[in-house]
Amino acid sequence: MKFSKILLVIAALLGASFASAADAPVSQKSKCDLKAEKAGKTCDHACCVASAKEGKNCEKCGGTNVAAAKK
Ligand SMILES: [Zn+2]
Ligand SMILES: [Zn+2]
Image (cartoon, rainbow, N blue to C red; front, top):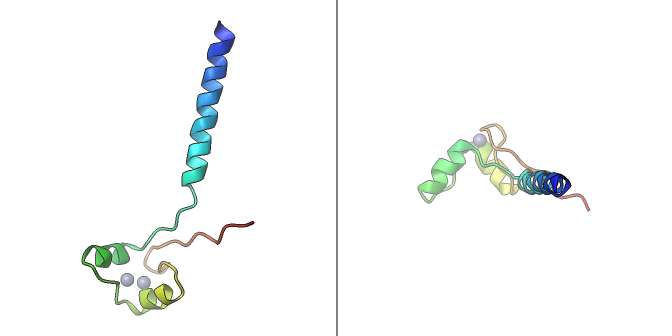
């Protein structure tokens, strides 16, 4: 009886770690980009415009870019 409970706990822990692994690699927009987006615009910082042209989030302003998935 106890053994099956332990299995349940292990399964739950594995499920949790799988879930967080799936959530982990996410690109974050910079705060100014999010602000501009809320206003229906794009940020007009030169650095943000340049990043947007490359399809990235501005890292100077706190955005992050997840490297393209390795395959
Ligand atoms: Zn900006
Ligand atoms: Zn910027």
